[in-house]
Length: 240
Image (spheres, rainbow, N blue to C red):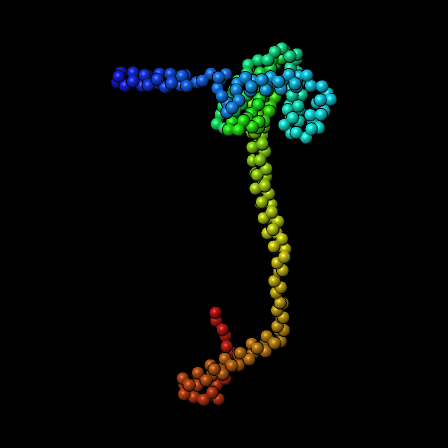
């Protein structure tokens, strides 16, 4: 078990050593035909030009129609708010990530530093973007993160409330729809039954009694072997 642990530690140390050896000095690397000093000089010249920019030159850049220059001048003006007096140029760093090469020049001011960033496409060293941003403190970063979180939660809850309201409105819509269908249905009209006059009812009942008496008389005559002339059925009582 101890041999396995020692073997794993040795392998980790070897990997770390190879990684450390593989890290080249950025000042001596050839960045696709451009040297470290040339990239650093481009950033330093941009800082010097922007700091000494007159109002007429600024107006000329903004009216040039070049989106990169217009974007750079506007971002520079925004980044200069509240930073104080210029002190010196700070650290210059180069970072290669995939197909992108990023150069960052730190500019030290009295109140807070500013970062000028050049972004290149590495395979042809074509300039993609230039940004200028103030360096935020840890408290400002935490505050912005909290505000973004609250905004995101607020949007989510607002959408959920709207969805619940829409779902509740479906109940009222179905109620109004059913009510409208009931109103459109015409009620069935029943034809009134004409009442039978009492005289007609009595005549029908008398006719029925006569027919029943004849039937009864015939039955009695047949059972006794006599004629129906020898007796008369005067009344019939119905029992239910």
